[in-house]
Length: 416
Image 1 (cartoon, rainbow, N blue to C red):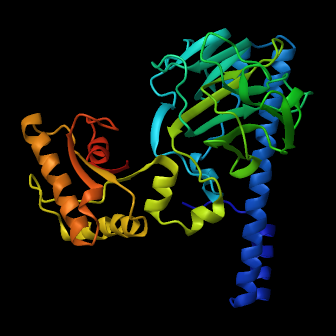
Image 2: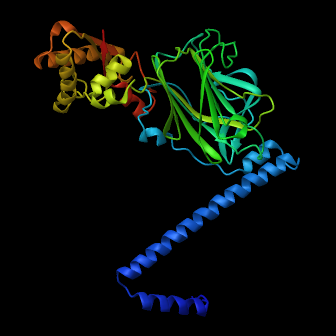
Image 3: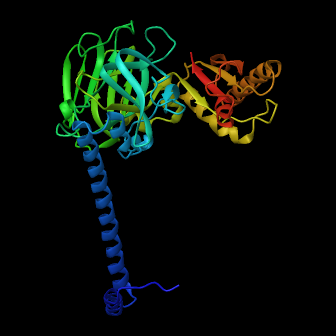
């Protein structure tokens, strides 16, 4: 099939190609043309997004559309949770709470959260599910433990949607609060019952205010665009760090130990405040980067969590015979023990739930004993080692999936 083509365009193309030839100059010209074309497309996409957001804002302000209709029309921008890996941020080793919004019903209260004040609801923003907090609302994770649940070392990650400055739909500040009170029925404010609080987009601007230790304060500015932004927080015994879209923006050397956290809408007239992809994990970024960079994997794990957990010590199926490739991992622990001769370890063997306890319990014990024997053969003092078989009784992941069972088949070296 023949397609019509503008003769003038064809003639121009021929002349250009003849003048440039087929050498490096032609390739350079075509490469530059490609770059300009890509940039032009990018600019058009960004302008289109800007137009759609402003159109949605106008409809809400003029009463032509409901808030939910307007937010559904806004194109969603996915956030890469690994964006912070360009800095020293590292998610904690054990996930304590995670909400990826899967399985949630739009229009219902989010199933993994508790309401402290105001209201919250699952909505869609450009087809992506998120939690909207409104009416001076406040939500906290629905965690079974009463009172305090934050450990001495933890990381918290989440995404929030930023609309624009004051002239747009409205003010949509989001406030993160790390409380120090034991009673989760209390709604912590800036000063009295919070170890640290952070407000994003203060009064619709690029400013972020934070308060800590009974009113000490600071702020930082970040000129971010409309869309989802990734926030990561690391707390290590006393040091607190905040990362915004992969860049560290807060580094406090001494903050009071928090006990639990919540998200708030700071003022009742704010609206369209969305949060999603919340992950709370035990373990944190090392206190000082320079120390962490010189540490071995075992040293870093012991310093941060008091234990070294590995899935790289392997055995023959159904036996306590170590595979040769496991000796390198065990050698790491041996090197640490010889460098720290007074350290004592409880060596715990863990299995998945495949098979009965009658098989798994003694098998995990024998495997732990095999690891101890290997450490002793490498020069470690047997007095500082104790083998304990845990079987499948302490899983760290869902045994219903292959990935979960792989995580549960592990060895833990617990410092005593």
